Amino acid sequence: MNIIQSPQHFNEVVQKESAVLIYFSHEQCNVCKVLKPKVKQMLEKKFPLMSMYYCDTMLQPEVAAQNRIFVVPTVLVFFDSRETYRFSRNIGLNELEQSISRPYSMMFED
Image (cartoon, rainbow, N blue to C red; front, side):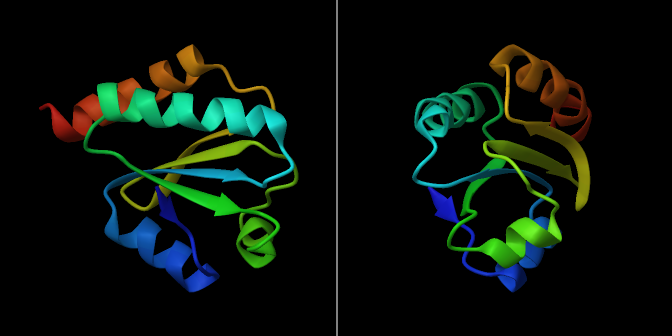
């Protein structure tokens, strides 16, 4: 999995990737350990052109602060360098999939 290394790296990823999901978490989050592989699998299966990055909020507190991440897990979805969706704490895979589906299809399937 791709890992965010610094605030500059985060900005580069958001600018260069047309569709990207960034998963914010840390090692002490047990819910995150279960959810992260499911999100990754969903992207690989349903949204193969969307990139996924992981940001450890303990190792990259500046990135978390610049994005107003106060709880984990938090998922940010960017299309064309703009934050399109934000999901925090209680994340439903169906809701995440449905939210990504429309902008993804408009960007890649038309």
